[in-house]
Length: 253
Image (cartoon, rainbow, N blue to C red; front, side, top):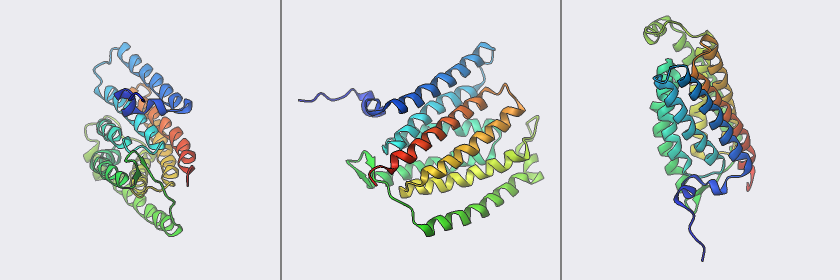
């Protein structure tokens, strides 16, 4: 008679994680914990954004790794992560990211949890599928239009004066464009997640690449912005996991 695995292994699936997955997780935690300690040592332990970014990063890396393994439970961790990331976006005055995390991602992940559960084997792993050619064409046609729209809104002087009124600096123009691009690409990626398309990982790589570039522009403005550094590391870990997800989701198709 087989013994049941401990509850924490059942939730996190650590017993089923391979060396690469554990390595991605461990390196991410090691670096972000180091950044958090650095912040505290330099007498900035009261910076709430750093603490929120660190916790959200942990939830997020667990969520992404579980997603690469097609585990439905990834959305439970994902909801916790986006709540935290939304808080950091608010603190950094990133309007597109704020809307993305709080107004879109939270209900989107709840819907994804329902849809994946309906199309899974044993209510644990989702069954992926391929996207069709016309769906790709439609996607990128809409992408170009909406990226242009959101970039234009964020570049409006009236919007910038309202949104950045309490900030002592204005981000670079490229920051606005990246913020708008991430918002639109992430919505497309989420729709792909709902549809269980294997190609969602390619869009995810694009999103994570833009996130990396976005946080670099913010770090350039203030190299001591530790919460931005943690978000940068988190984005890099997500991109690495997304590349892994491309190959992992290709199996059994």
